[in-house]
Image 1 (spheres, helix red, strand yellow):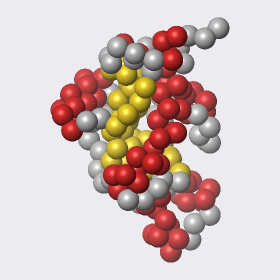
Image 2 (cartoon, helix red, strand yellow; image 1 turned 135 degrees about the vertical axis):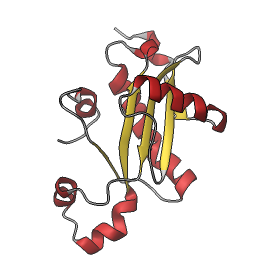
Image 3 (tube, one colour; image 1 turned 120 degrees about the vertical axis):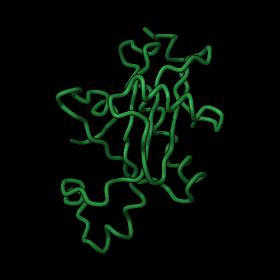
Length: 151
Protein backbone atom coordinates (compact mmCIF):
# COMPACT_ATOMS: atom_id res chain seq x y z
CA UNK A 1 0.00 0.00 0.00
CA UNK A 2 1.30 3.44 -0.95
CA UNK A 3 2.03 5.92 1.84
CA UNK A 4 0.80 9.33 0.65
CA UNK A 5 3.25 11.09 2.99
CA UNK A 6 6.09 10.01 0.71
CA UNK A 7 4.31 11.32 -2.40
CA UNK A 8 4.61 14.85 -1.03
CA UNK A 9 8.24 14.44 0.03
CA UNK A 10 10.70 16.60 -1.91
CA UNK A 11 14.40 17.39 -1.69
CA UNK A 12 16.15 20.56 -2.87
CA UNK A 13 19.27 22.57 -2.14
CA UNK A 14 18.70 25.05 0.64
CA UNK A 15 18.11 28.64 -0.32
CA UNK A 16 20.60 31.31 0.75
CA UNK A 17 18.12 32.60 3.31
CA UNK A 18 17.87 29.17 4.97
CA UNK A 19 21.59 28.70 5.68
CA UNK A 20 21.39 29.86 9.30
CA UNK A 21 18.38 27.65 10.02
CA UNK A 22 20.08 24.67 8.35
CA UNK A 23 23.20 25.17 10.49
CA UNK A 24 21.17 25.61 13.68
CA UNK A 25 19.10 22.47 13.02
CA UNK A 26 22.23 20.40 12.40
CA UNK A 27 23.89 21.82 15.50
CA UNK A 28 20.85 20.79 17.53
CA UNK A 29 20.11 17.39 15.97
CA UNK A 30 23.37 15.98 14.53
CA UNK A 31 26.25 14.92 16.75
CA UNK A 32 28.85 16.41 14.36
CA UNK A 33 27.14 19.79 13.95
CA UNK A 34 27.02 21.74 10.72
CA UNK A 35 30.66 22.33 9.72
CA UNK A 36 31.76 21.00 6.33
CA UNK A 37 34.69 22.11 4.20
CA UNK A 38 35.53 22.45 0.52
CA UNK A 39 32.91 22.29 -2.19
CA UNK A 40 29.61 21.77 -0.38
CA UNK A 41 25.95 21.20 -1.17
CA UNK A 42 23.31 21.44 1.53
CA UNK A 43 19.86 19.91 1.04
CA UNK A 44 16.58 20.00 2.89
CA UNK A 45 13.82 17.44 2.53
CA UNK A 46 10.33 18.80 3.03
CA UNK A 47 6.90 17.27 3.41
CA UNK A 48 3.87 18.33 1.36
CA UNK A 49 3.24 21.26 3.72
CA UNK A 50 6.82 22.54 3.41
CA UNK A 51 7.89 21.31 6.84
CA UNK A 52 11.54 20.33 7.17
CA UNK A 53 11.93 16.58 7.74
CA UNK A 54 15.61 15.90 6.93
CA UNK A 55 18.91 17.63 6.22
CA UNK A 56 21.80 16.40 4.09
CA UNK A 57 25.24 17.81 3.50
CA UNK A 58 27.71 16.77 0.82
CA UNK A 59 31.24 18.10 0.62
CA UNK A 60 34.66 17.52 -0.85
CA UNK A 61 36.00 14.05 -0.04
CA UNK A 62 38.97 13.13 2.11
CA UNK A 63 42.19 13.60 0.17
CA UNK A 64 43.22 10.06 0.91
CA UNK A 65 41.07 7.11 1.90
CA UNK A 66 42.79 3.77 1.49
CA UNK A 67 39.65 1.61 1.13
CA UNK A 68 38.09 4.01 -1.40
CA UNK A 69 41.28 4.41 -3.39
CA UNK A 70 41.88 0.65 -3.51
CA UNK A 71 38.23 0.00 -4.46
CA UNK A 72 38.46 2.44 -7.37
CA UNK A 73 41.96 1.29 -8.32
CA UNK A 74 43.45 4.77 -8.45
CA UNK A 75 47.10 5.47 -8.84
CA UNK A 76 48.33 8.59 -7.03
CA UNK A 77 48.26 10.52 -10.31
CA UNK A 78 44.69 9.49 -11.13
CA UNK A 79 43.58 10.23 -7.58
CA UNK A 80 44.86 13.81 -7.83
CA UNK A 81 43.09 14.38 -11.16
CA UNK A 82 39.78 12.67 -10.37
CA UNK A 83 39.14 13.28 -6.67
CA UNK A 84 36.97 16.27 -7.52
CA UNK A 85 34.39 13.89 -9.03
CA UNK A 86 33.79 12.32 -5.59
CA UNK A 87 31.39 13.84 -3.06
CA UNK A 88 31.30 12.88 0.57
CA UNK A 89 27.94 12.61 2.32
CA UNK A 90 29.13 14.25 5.52
CA UNK A 91 25.80 15.00 7.19
CA UNK A 92 22.49 13.19 7.13
CA UNK A 93 19.96 14.08 9.77
CA UNK A 94 16.35 13.00 10.01
CA UNK A 95 14.58 15.72 11.97
CA UNK A 96 11.88 14.86 14.54
CA UNK A 97 9.10 15.65 12.02
CA UNK A 98 10.51 13.03 9.63
CA UNK A 99 11.03 10.15 12.02
CA UNK A 100 9.00 7.39 10.42
CA UNK A 101 9.94 4.13 8.72
CA UNK A 102 11.69 4.47 5.34
CA UNK A 103 12.17 8.25 5.47
CA UNK A 104 15.96 8.00 5.38
CA UNK A 105 16.14 5.79 2.31
CA UNK A 106 13.45 7.82 0.48
CA UNK A 107 15.28 11.08 1.18
CA UNK A 108 18.67 9.66 0.22
CA UNK A 109 17.30 8.24 -3.02
CA UNK A 110 15.69 11.54 -4.04
CA UNK A 111 18.87 13.45 -3.19
CA UNK A 112 21.21 11.14 -5.08
CA UNK A 113 19.04 11.44 -8.20
CA UNK A 114 19.71 15.16 -8.38
CA UNK A 115 23.14 15.55 -6.75
CA UNK A 116 25.35 15.45 -9.85
CA UNK A 117 23.25 17.99 -11.80
CA UNK A 118 23.15 20.31 -8.78
CA UNK A 119 26.92 19.94 -8.38
CA UNK A 120 27.42 20.94 -12.02
CA UNK A 121 25.25 24.03 -11.50
CA UNK A 122 27.15 25.03 -8.37
CA UNK A 123 30.72 23.79 -8.89
CA UNK A 124 30.99 23.23 -12.65
CA UNK A 125 31.65 19.50 -12.68
CA UNK A 126 29.77 16.25 -12.18
CA UNK A 127 29.80 13.88 -9.24
CA UNK A 128 30.50 10.31 -10.31
CA UNK A 129 30.87 8.69 -6.89
CA UNK A 130 29.43 9.42 -3.45
CA UNK A 131 31.13 8.15 -0.32
CA UNK A 132 30.11 8.24 3.31
CA UNK A 133 31.40 7.07 6.65
CA UNK A 134 29.10 5.62 9.30
CA UNK A 135 29.99 5.26 12.96
CA UNK A 136 28.67 1.74 13.69
CA UNK A 137 28.39 2.56 17.40
CA UNK A 138 25.72 5.14 16.48
CA UNK A 139 24.07 3.80 13.30
CA UNK A 140 24.12 0.68 11.18
CA UNK A 141 23.73 2.53 7.88
CA UNK A 142 20.64 0.70 6.62
CA UNK A 143 19.52 3.60 4.43
CA UNK A 144 22.87 3.58 2.64
CA UNK A 145 22.50 -0.07 1.73
CA UNK A 146 18.95 0.63 0.55
CA UNK A 147 20.36 3.42 -1.63
CA UNK A 148 22.92 1.10 -3.30
CA UNK A 149 26.01 2.20 -1.35
CA UNK A 150 28.63 -0.55 -1.16
CA UNK A 151 30.40 -1.40 2.09
